[in-house]
Amino acid sequence: MSSNEDEQEKMLKQLEEGSKKTPTPKFSMVKWLDYMVGNDILELFGKTGFGKSKICSQIAIELSKEGKSVTYYDSELSLSKKGVRALERNTGVTYKSNPDYEQMIKIDLDKIKTDYLIIDSTTLYITGRWAFSDMHKRGHMLQMLQWLYNKVKVWCQKKKKTAIFVAQPISEMGERNEIAPIGDKANFFCKTILKIKAKRNKNTEKIENRRIVVFKSRDHPDGTVVSHFKTTATGVIFDQKEQMMKIA
Image (cartoon, rainbow, N blue to C red; front, top):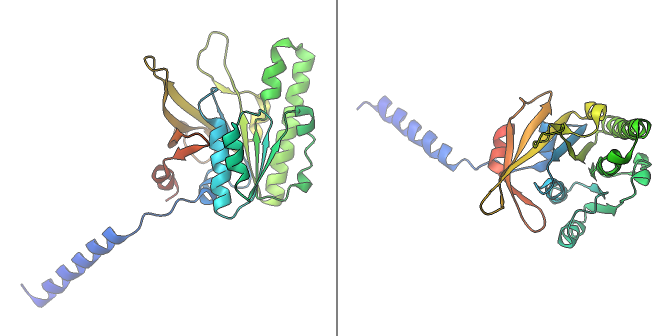
C-alpha cells in the first residue's frame, strides 16, 4: 500500500470516528416554536383527555428552563393541583386562573411583558353556551372570538411574540371524529393549527399512541407527525429527537 493510500485510509478513519462523536443536538422549545409558528398564533385542538392542557403546561415549563417568560391564562381550570404547582415553581411562568370569559377577552395585551402567551382555552365559552343559543347569540360569540384572535395576532406580529391557544373540536352530526377546531373564521388568524390524536384501547380503556399532527400550516404538509408524547402527572414527555429532526 502506497503512502498516499495510507494517508487516505487514516483520514477516512478520523472522519468516521468524528461522526460517531458528534453529539445529538440539544432540544430547544424556543427553536421548535420559532420553526413551527414564529411570531404568530399556534393553536392546539383535540378530544377531551388527549393531553392539550398538559402539552401547554409542558411548553411553558420548557420555555422557562430556557430563560423565557410565559403568561398562562387558564380559563378551563382543567389543570390539576399538581400541574398548577409545577407551573408556579418555574419563576418564568405567570399562571392566571381566569374562568370568566367576558373578562378574558378584555385582556390588556400592552400589560403583558412576557415572551409567550398561552390561553387554555379560547373556545370553552362557546361550547358551553352554543346549544342553548339562538343564531344571533351564536354570531355574537363567534365575532367576539374573531376579535380576540385578531387582537392577539396583531400583538404577536407587532411585539415579535408567540401565542399558543387551546381549542375544543367541532364535529358534524353523526360524526365521531372531530373535523376541525371550533371557532369558524377565527381559525383563519392562526398561522399553524396542530391536532392532538390518540387511540383508546378497547380492552384497557387506556389512551395510547398520543401524537401531535399538523392540521393546518403554510410551511408544513397536512398530516405530518410533529411529535409523539406520553403524559405524566404534571405535563408530558415529548419525543424530542423526533421534534429535533423536523428542524434539523
